[in-house]
Length: 495
Length: 96
Image (cartoon, rainbow over the protein chains, first blue to last red):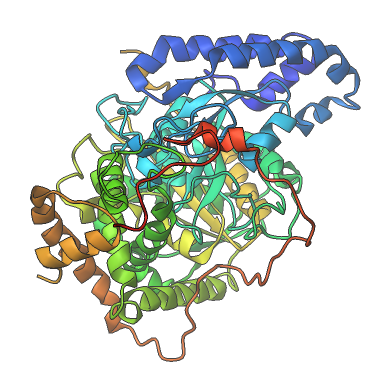
């Protein structure tokens, strides 16, 4: 999208002395003020603090510019870049709600590691974005507080659960935002909103300070308008964290080094039989076209199979709710968050949790508790975990023959509000292409590969080997440079 | 139906959730559908397949055994719904 500046453009401009941090923060806040009434991406805008921070950075700009050993060093960090955080990431002193009434008054006494890292990189946090409550959902309709509208069509959902972050980026309010992805919650909203979203390898980015949904699946990742911007942010937020015991020993790397535009030696795996019946024809056509763009440029297309991915949704909707039922047990009205008084402790727990949690959250806690309960654990939860092993083995086998695997991000473009709400299972099937990567712990990116007849973005998903974000980004960047189209300006902003 | 309304009530109680009768009535068929869908997993031969609880094998990740300060009391009490200035107050744990 040429309309809104990228991180790279902002840094280049500041390095050249044309602008300073407060210019970009003010522009961001102005855009939010002008358009968020229609979009509803932000739960909280950090206006005063952001401007103070940006002005502090203004004072440092001359020194920053002088210390740049070369023009390209301007992208060494995120100096003066405004950004948003999904509201399930703790920010010290700034309310963090997970879009739930049970945390509507919660002000964290500490910040998530990713928040600390972005501050250390001199970025400016302008606000917290809307999500499905506790990240449970694929449309952001489950937020207890407000609806977020897709900037490309205000009658459509932005996707979920990181719908607020994706919409904020698509609408030009911020050049990047962080989202979290447990079953597709970064990639699918990125696809629906026509932006780029990456879920890193499990363990690549610290989960410390991320309000936990499913601990063995959750990952934080960047959403931005270009692959290069995503690579710049990923570099800042990755790396081992002693505060997260599931954090991989791997340190961060300069992911932009792999952005050569070269796709000749790449082997692109294509899964022909994967859930083909449910996929919208225009999505199919757009994905096929994207793959031929790559093969015309010299990439090799290899057919691979992922036989057990057909069971991914079934496995996920046992594993994720089970882990969630355990993670959400802490919301009991005792130490923080909303409390509803009761005559007895039990009554307090039940009333607090019943009034504090929305219906989808309750639904998942009940499924999860059931799947873990005595007599059912082996039949449900354990089998689901065994399926994870088989799904992961399929990927290991496929990656013997290819470097990245290409497929749609979602079976259809953005749907209308309420369209998938009648039957929870309908909504769950939206995640059919994104869930396998979470179960296997592998990195995946979604980037725009077309627009439907109705003007709705379509996303191409590329999956990679564990800790091989470099190859995923290389393939994505190569496609982005070759694809020959630009996302149209979001129609919803013109209305 | 796989999950009856009684099961919903029982499981909700285990999870310390009070669910309205109206919700119990609509949840039972929805949850049954989801569990029935998940039963596809029964059709697959899993003999000898190890369950995956975490994508990557990390074991016994411990920090060094050095005492560290926790958060100050006032900071913790700031978020507490009810406190007496020193401790968080809750309804009696043991009745009678």
